[in-house]
Amino acid sequence: MSATDHVELSSSSAAYGPDNPAPVIEPPRARTKRTPRSTRTNFEMYGWLFMRLSGIVLVVLVIGHLLIQLVLDGGVTKVGFAFVAGRWASPFWQTWDLIMLWLAMLHGGNGLRTVINDYAERDNTRFWLKMVLYTATAFTIILGTLVIFTFDPNIR
Amino acid sequence: MPAGTLYRGREGMWSWVAHRVSGVLIFFFLFVHVLDTALVRVSPEDYDKVVNTYKHPIVSLLEYGLVAAVLFHALNGLRVIAVDFWSKGPKYQKQMLWTVVGIWVVLMIGAIYPVLGHAARVLFGS
Image (cartoon, rainbow over all chains, first blue to last red):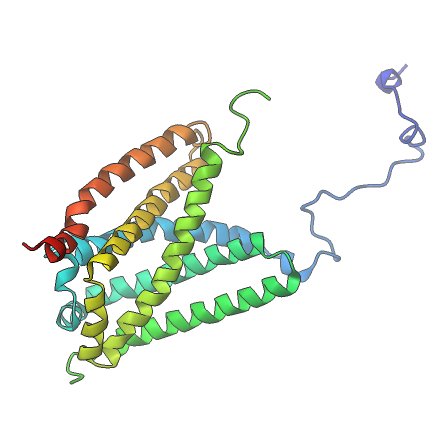
């Protein structure tokens, strides 16, 4: 008498046994040839990891930026062309602002991508909202990068 | 349902909502902020003209709101990282949220004078 004899088999599974095995059900995460191309990579996992790693760096860069712009030395009253020229004369602050720009835009872009995926239920709406998002994000990153690299304190 | 397993309508959900709302607000500000900074490539006068609107008392109030959003998003983001990577993170997520709120309140009180002081001087004279 084997252990399985104690199990009450329901009518649907009673037909299966060692000689007539039940069909194999793939685990939900297993990738097969029929898996859509878009879900064959670990893109979402890397996105998840990027949000956390960039987040830690951004905490330092952004809070430092807020302290300099809004708190120290008279707060926002000191900000003007001359102030920007003074800061971007230093490669340190250029690098700071460049890294902050790229990380913040990619972090925010990926965040908004998640929000769009969550709330835009129609395929077309979701697609076009993301196209607008990607365009705006790429435009902002390119514009900001050009501004930092081509800044000219003697423009006038 | 046993206490502690209900996520909806409790700290976990509301901090998620606040994280999302603050994140979206910051993203839209960032977009505008890169555009206004790009004016340094147009002319010093144009840049200064736009930055001077940032010194208006009403905009200072918006800046205070921006600081509130950034600080909450930063502190709660660190909490999310702790929940994900620290083995006891999920167990202490509520305590960590109230710690985040506590630090946030202290920092927001500290930011009143630096961020809103200028607006007060404009409105009521120095």
